[in-house]
Image (cartoon, rainbow, N blue to C red; front, top):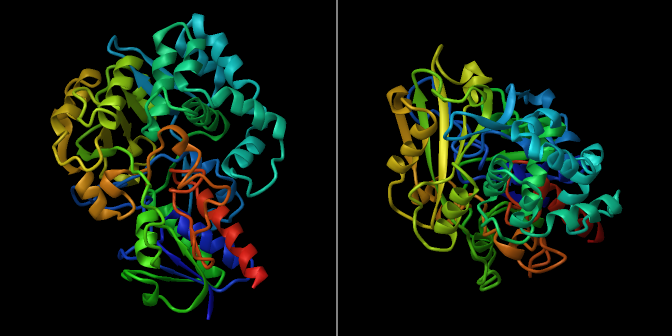
Amino acid sequence: MLDAVVVGAGPNGLTAAVELARRGFSVAVFEARGTVGGGARTEELTLPGFRHDPCSAAHPLGVNSPAFRALPLERHGLEWLHPELPMAHPFPDGTAAVLARSVAETAASFGPRDAGAYRRLVAPFLPRWDTLARDFMSLPLTALPRDPVTLARFGLTGLPPSTWLMRRFRDERAKTLFAGLVAHVMAPLNGLATGAVGLVFALAAHARGWPMARGGSQAVSDALTGYLKELGGAVHTDYEVKRLDDLPPARAYVFDTSPTALARIAGLGRAYEGYRYGPGVFKIDYALDGPVPWTAEAPRVAGTVQIGADSAEIGAALNAASREGRAPERPFLITVQPSVVDPTRAPAGQHVFWAYGHVPNGWSGDLTDAIERQLERFAPGFRDRVLARATAGPPQLAARNANYVGGDIATGSVAGLRLLLRPRPTLFPYHTQHPAVFLCSSATPPGPGVHGMSGHNAAKAVWRRLRQT
């Protein structure tokens, strides 16, 4: 009998398996798809030689993850590549604000009226970032805080809505960039704890950047898999699990799946009946015959580029998708251009690029024209660079990755308290009604992102049980 079986080979499932194997437990992972990866894969979606990331591409939480940093992933092929700028946010007037590694450079891009306010915002936390990140990403208390005072101060700053935090800024440049940071988790700007979301992304950039993995996000998953096998763990792909009886006997079962899928497979009935999924996304992967023709200079060297003319436009786009049940006319876009730092991703002189906008959960329309009109506002002539595109709305995303229910790449709504209390209000989010069944996906704290911390935290709950039995 195995000590633990993990269902789903995304970053969280693989991290949970690694953490258990490191402690001497026998572990096997079962994945329905033909390759490992979940939200961290790399595929040729458009043309031969163009290697795209179907979901995550830039990894600020990955390079800052306490779980990943404790593992020898570089030995298994993971190499982080850092663009000149982690992120840029262009404006219609041809200028841009930036999120740079340097706090001073970032503050200067906001203008003199907000430079000091931004420095004062990040100053209390950046020197203590490593400890803060570990404490914040271990909530609820899977470990005692190492710096409870800083964590409490961070909570006082970040728990209010981001709209409150943005009152510190006087001009639109800083407000817009910060609103875009919050929008990475697809929550309305006036939601609880959204200030913490923007602050975490900003601090992560200043601490270690927003890098990409050489060769694509698949490298993260492959490195975790390589280390797991070195530890004696097994990985089985093309193995769809429909019920627990499909799996070998084990002392514990750990699910890197949506909560509703876990309930169905494990026979937990209506355990997660009230679980809510958030907005979906409409994503386009592009093969380009040259770099994106940004009008502003900063986006040309940035790994990630946010697109939204001002904070009001960003807020309206989020509200349309999450509250009004419609696709926004001017969607807020998150875009990533991996080949500005990794030329191996496309043939010589050509580029890969992706963009996504928020849409209602399960939306079946086509946002291509709206996305490209937005891109043309800030990069005139963009459409002329397109060699091929691969589009994926909520139905296609859900078909590719069963965790993305209705196209929700966060595996659950992050609105209001659901950002903090996932998948339900409890101090034990990784446990289920079945004492041998656990949940480790991004439906559990600390939530979405390629960081492995949900798997890391869940593994703690699992090995504590295994030691008791």
